[in-house]
Amino acid sequence: MPDYDYFIVFAEMRTGSNFLEANLNALDGVACLGEVFNPHFIGYPNRSECLGIGKAERDADPAVMLDALRAAPGLNGFRYFHDHDPRVFELVMQDPRCAKVVLIRNPLDSYVSWKIARATDQWKLTDVRRRRAEKVTFDAAEFTRFLTRLQDFQVQLTRGLQHAGQAAFHLAYEDLQDLEMFNGLAAYLGAEARLPALDQSLKIQNPGPVDDKVTNPEDMQAALAKLDRFNLNRTPNFEPRRGPQVPSFVAASDLPLLYMPMRGGPEDQVAAWLASIGPKGGEPLRDFSQKELRKWKRANPGHRSFTVLRHPLARAHAVFCQKILATGPGTFSEIRKTLIQRYKVPLPKPGELPASAAEHRAAFLGFLDFLGANLAGQTEIRVDAHWATQSAVLEGMAQFALPDVLVREDDMQSVLPALSTALGGLNSGPSPTGPEQPYALADIYSPEVEAKAAEVYQRDYVMFGFGPWKG
Image 1 (spheres, rainbow, N blue to C red):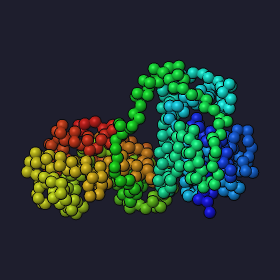
Image 2 (tube, helix red, strand yellow):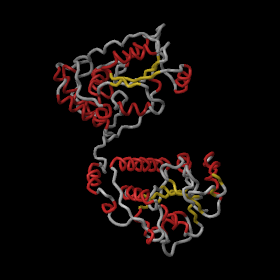
Image 3 (tube, helix red, strand yellow):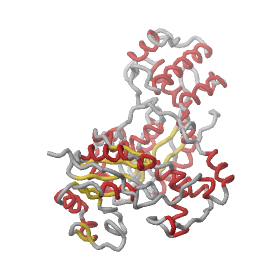
């Protein structure tokens, strides 16, 4: 039994996909049927059907078209670009009987070729005597958008293959002149036929250096120099993905207002505020399941939701005081032991407190060092929600729903009363957050402390625009 029932060629415009298709069609028993799922036509422009399936039927249910590809004699396939029917991507990724072929080309070459084809209205070339040559203008903003679309789709494709546990046959534009590569592709597809020679009916349209094809090569070089080709400016993220943490969400008892808390933030103050702002007041609603929260949302049309962002340094210090220095129920006593024994954090003995602000600062700096290693996936200890980056927590929330409003802790006294009154509640703010014990952050703050926090929480500083803590 053949390994595959049909195939898909993932490509883009101006990557050589027409040449690839022509040579696939030169193999006995193999048929590549064009852009079968192009939203504007079916297979090729001016065609009304493919394998007996019309465009309207295909659009109503793309699975019908895939069934026709499987059922047709021989091995059939199609070319698929990033802007084709997205439903098809999910269907083929879930199907191990669909062979995946990935064709890529240098994005700059593809972009310039696309610009020339648009300018000349020549998308294929079979006779070099009829070649239309024209220089085009490189547009930096347009190229950036072009490149971003390609890269986003490549990431989507790579993840789709990884998640499905499948492998694809990869080839580049330059490989298309390699006969052995084509016959290797035939073997991958399970075809018995081999090509004795390449079909050269389609000609390369724009040979020569890319600088010779544009009117402004200096502008192009300057724009390309600004691109971060190796993504050197990214903020690496090794945190585990988080769930939405719906059971921690809190809703006012008599207002359609939902608090989606960040652990390590002013949770108690905001929950107490929710209990006080409604016309009747009352204990907030807690411990939702996802099903229950959806029911609450349906029962409260016009509902609003929010979370509170705390400065990363203030949040880390609050967690340090409340969960590491403190003892008793709800604190992290086992983690505290490990911090002392394994990571040499200079913490006082259980039940004792730092003797001075200097001792407190030293212990907190040691805790920040641990957090840096922990968030980088270098420790055996869990990345607890109390010190996970707020960016990661928000990404987790997004698996269920994102909050309407991101409120900075410093703005709670103005933003939250306005949110309350808009829903018919009282015009009051939450109680101020008291200083941490035994020493407030202001007592131990220093440039060293700020620099360490900014290093550990670089992602939150960058994503949310936090500057130095101001007290």
